[in-house]
Image 1 (cartoon, one colour):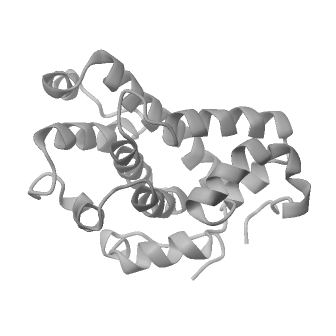
Image 2: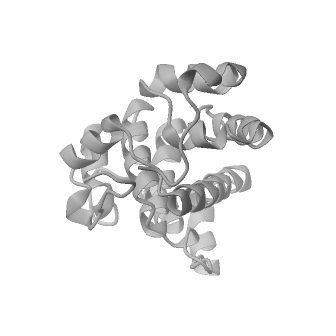
Length: 198
């Protein structure tokens, strides 16, 4: 059970701009956001930011954003975000073969050199302090524009906020991402579900 109870679904009408598209894409309302809704202004702003960064194509396409989010969440150690980004990544277009090989992106032939540079950056950029070096940015610049790199940093930074929020509140993971994570090898990477789930 989460350390703070989520608001009941019947008290979320004012956040329909966020919850309606998210529930349509994911099939459920995320527990983390239902807890965040206890502070409406925070929920509204974080919800808009989430939709802008993670639900709209920008300088990067959505599947790559979700793969970046996954590696950042895995490195940060957030059980909730790691499962969500894996499951959501599939919902937003990451093929299953990439999902199942994402932890070996450095050697798997399912990833391009450009994707490898982005994922290597995501893996170290989420550490505190950041592990990103000039060498990471030199590698990124071989394949990506400044605008695309800024968007990568935005994805990692957004999940820095979300991993801290979810870890501190020990947010209960919903059934769909839990089952998806178990079915697609996340436990083999050392992932352990938290938030009152077993």
